[in-house]
Amino acid sequence: MIMVEKNLDFRSDTVTKPSPEMREASYNAILGDDVYGDDPEVNELERVGAEIFGMEAALFVTSGTMGNAVAVLAHTQRGDEIILEEGSHIYVNEVGGLAVMGQLMAKTVKGIKGHMDPADIQAGVRVDNIHFPPTTLLCVENTHNTAGGIPLTLDQMKSYWDVAKANNLNVHLDGARVFNAAVALGVDVKKIAKHVDTIQLCLSKGLAAPIGSLVVGPQDVIDKARKYRKMLGGGMRQAGIIAAPGIIAITEMVDRLADDHANAKLLAEGLTKIGIKVVNDVQTNMVYVDFSPIGWTAEDWNKTCTDMGWKSRGRGTGTRLVTHYGIEKEDIKSFIEGIAKRV
Ligand SMILES: Cc1ncc(COP(=O)(O)O)c(C=O)c1O
Image (cartoon, rainbow, N blue to C red; front, top):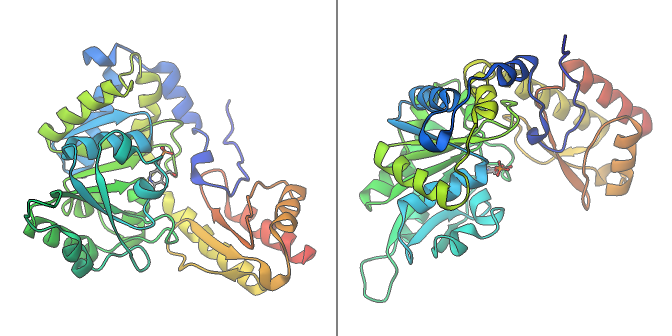
């Protein structure tokens, strides 16, 4: 029997390992060639994924980065300008793919806790003028990673949608952690999906599948994205091996995200008591800390964590700690006790 693996690693929720049920689903997957549309597991994952979000269609891709890339390409033409939040993953952490692959201009808007003021979005939209590129797409991130795992509210999502549609823009959501947002807000993901045209959602983060993302949206946009996926080398063959755990991810692993959120709060409270500064508003599974108030450097932090059997990557005076499948409440408590003893 396979046991649930402990995973004492705070670096990210991308480090999660598949559950025993996921491993079994991979083993038992009935396979076909997905480029021919013949893989039953992929077809089922795409069907269920579209249904959960109330969208027409879905596309299974290798990663969040690929999902965002094919969605952005499907929405735009070479030479368009797109609007993104300044700290968004697509703008900061996807190797400039929008410029390289899409030949797109980026107009960034500075958010507060990940939230872009709709007036700033409006101000970023180009008017129709022979000198200007057309603005065609607004990208949103929910939860917003670098803002501290902040879930943007339904009202905020609606405000982006309203300003986008008033200006004929499409809206793409980088929903790498959109289920964390839905759980934190206590709403069905369909309600978030109502305010966007497409969503990229990661199966391989808090939901613990080993690989992959889905892009969900209208059939015509997903058809275009499928073609871009093939162009990028993402047309996979017997992909049911990795799609089968993805089905479990979106049907069985969502509710437990509440435990990750509770563990993140517990961690934040415990570290605050020790004198470590929590710098973000902890609402989902991320805790950003500054350990300089206890006089520690990143080296001190990293060494202490390693000595206690944890992985964490301090840089400068702080780090991001992410709670996820494989870390239990007891682990958080013993981590806090361990740090307290060493301060
Ligand atoms: C907000 C956000 N979007 C997209 C991605 C990209 O996902 P992947 O690592 O699967 O390419 C990440 C990865 O951490 C992320 O945090």
